[in-house]
Image (tube, rainbow, N blue to C red):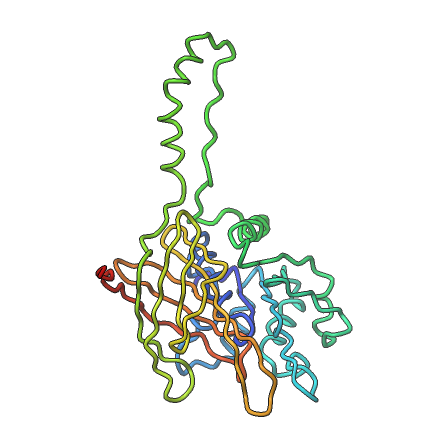
Length: 315
C-alpha cells in the first residue's frame, strides 16, 4: 500500500468545497495516491474510524482546514470539537500526539482559535503557524502552501518548475544586439503571451440538472459566463433564481466562483448562504463540484455536469 503523505482534515459542513479543490491541486504535485481525503479514499462498507486512523498513521503532514464552522458550535451545548468521538477532533489529536507536522489552513479570513477554546488534546494546535487560503488569492496562497509542504516532502514526482531561467546575455553586447532585440521584441512578446495561462472556452450559456441533498430537490439550473483572461463574470441560478457570479476566476481548464443567497426559516432570522462552485472543462461539458455553506442543516457536497446551450438567435 503506498505511503500517504498528506492528510486533509476538514469538517464537511464547513469546508468541503475547499477540501475537494485542495485535494485536486495537491494530487497534481504528489499524485492522488499520496493525498488522503475521506470522500475519495473510504469505500462503501469500510469502517470509517479505522480507515481514518490508519491513514493518519501513514501520513507525514496533516492539513487542518479551518473555516467559520470548524469548531462545530451548537446553541446551548459545547461545540462538536469537545465531543470525544468527533472525527475532526480525533484526526487532529492523533496527529499532534504522534508529532506529525500539523499545518492549520485558515479559509477566507477565518481566525485561529485560542487554546482556551480548544479541548485539551487539541490545545497545542493554537501554537502552530497557520497559513491562509482565500478564494480571492487562491493561486498565490496555494503556492505558499506548496512551498511549505516541499520543505517536508520535497518536490512531488508530478511537479514541474514554474519557469526556466533564461541564459544570461554576453557581457559585451554591441549595438547590433540592441537592434536585433528591437526587431525580435514583438516575437518575444508573443512567446510570453503564448506561455500565459489560457482561458477555458466557457463564455456563453450552460444548463445542468442538479439534485440537491434534500427531498424533492431536482432543479434545472443555468449559467451565463462572460469575461476575458482570468476574469470570470456572469450569473448562475440557484433554485432557479439568478445570482451574480462573484470572485470568479478562469484559468487552464478550471473555473471557480461563488454566489450568495438568503435562507429564511420559520421563526428564525434570515441567514446568508454561500454557494461555492469549482468546475473543470472536459470536452464540451463542465464537471461541477458545489458546496453550499451557511445553511441549516449543513449540506453535503454536490456534483453535476453542465452542458453548453446553443447561442441565442438575435431577433
